[in-house]
Length: 398
Image (cartoon, rainbow, N blue to C red):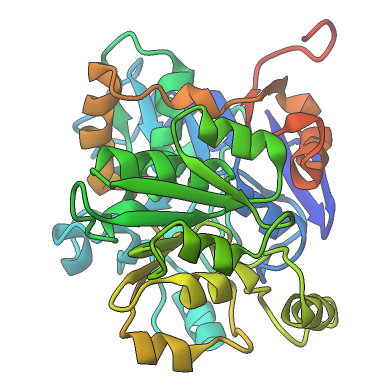
């Protein structure tokens, strides 16, 4: 089959690799019909998430058709159309039974590697996201093996298009959980979102769905701000104004009640802190550039919430903990418990409350993916979200 392969830092390519096979009775094989490039894939491309190996198949947002099941798979059958959350959960451990699927105890065979790196216990396995998260093959390919298929395969039985349900595998639940973590008081609370990429767009719309009185999104890319404005979200371009002053002015001087950092470890920005972050990251003296997180802490109202769906890779520097402590802020973060949100959010889509395909700006074949990675990273051509067809032909494709 064809697959998008990590070939080293800043290099991905299409290669022919062996088709996946069933390894355990609880596995299924899925023929992928749609897959997407996620912002967190760029952290792998850029070499900021350790333990990638040449030959790894990338991709964790995908859906398709079940073509083979193990003997222990009871809920799925060949021919089912399924979406598959990006994190892998057993469904049986204490964390899974409490709905905390991303903390699964049984799906990361390399948990000791993660524990050695982070000095703490590891989360569960992830598709296509390094060996510290299990070394599982990803879904930017024509086929994928789905472990614990009865837990991770969600049947789509309506006529909704792939475009409308694909993002239930990651970015829609990720944005929704980030907003839910804010415990928004309907009609009263103001929510600010740093980062108007795909997760930021869904976090902002989710805050609206949860009843925020006002939602403000902060970015520097005009087309991303324009996409947010189309949904009635206020915007701030941090390259044109002092973002901290602008947020105070927009909230009667107190700051947003809750702030969502949908940027993570590759934040841009300006000022001495941003310059030092960049220099130290390039020298591998620092894992993360945290300008967005600093702004989130400094702008948030007293007693507010800083919610962090953006990915962080390790140790951070110059985090304003004194300000966070003085304000009594609450921090919520971590990988999304995707399985928890699939059915409720699918119900919203089926009712017409939201059509997640709004975020798609580029469609391409899998063969075109290496070039689209560059386009997405450099934010060229108005690129916000790329959806790939693993079976499309390069020649003649629009």
